[in-house]
Image (cartoon, rainbow, N blue to C red; front, side):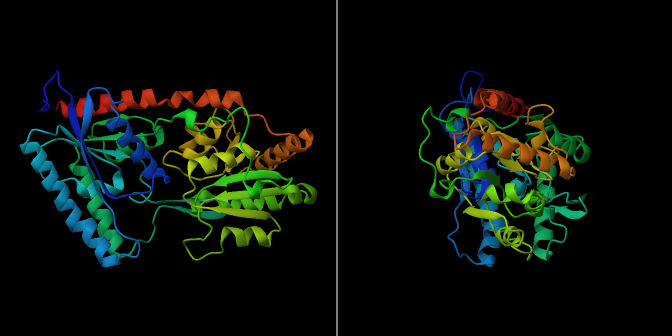
Length: 393
């Protein structure tokens, strides 16, 4: 049984490696969990602390490796031992699978991992529209290979997993069949995205009269920016010239290929790179003042962008692939390789924009209602169940 007793709050230590921006996917998920715990929203639980570290920008690769493989794991193990001796911890929660190496070889309290995806641990290759799309690292270097082995060994030492989607749950059961597992999807505070009755002024980049479209995602091949560009390039010239695309995410290709903006320029598409790590208040302006989110991703651990756009009342065109297809309204996803369906959908968006003759798009109340199934209260209840289950062993 947990050390805190049946009538007292139990305590969970949150653990991750290097701190991430709350504006990133994994960083945002961890930030929300930490905030919920510390504000008392997870019934029966309180924080035993948080172990993570900050590295200054420009830190050498050697220093980063030393912190990741040696210094921080030792610090985490000492913290667990100290808290256990003081009877101040009942469970350790590791942020994600990329931090599984932090699970001590012999922990005095149960340790669980929130598994977001297996992209790098179980890499795969997809072929969509004749394009080879690598999901995860296919050819990791020597150091990364050793790192991945450490992560796999750490996962096997865990006392249980929590995952977020049916797709990840299936992989967990396939590759770790004996591991206790609960599926708890992320929570979403829809009030953070809901448009006000009178919208704030749009960013300068959206003030020109045009059919503004939004793309959110990195230049990772699985995000399929190239596909989006090809579809828009194939539109009739009149519609293509009236479309402007605004891309939130890194413009530079991490694999040495052309930048997204370069590919768009080569196809005579007006493409504006907003940047990466855009705060939600600024990103909301793009959600509210653009016509639709284009999300052709080939694979997602969860798929925040479509959910957040729907919460903002913005339609989303998303591919019918895991795991974001679990989150869209039934029957609304587009087949990933159906170019004509994507082209028709974008032309319909343009036609709706043109018919308004400059009037503001109204938020879609049905989409805002749809995402209520991801309520924070449901997430808090799910985490309470998962933590209590494992702490009681």
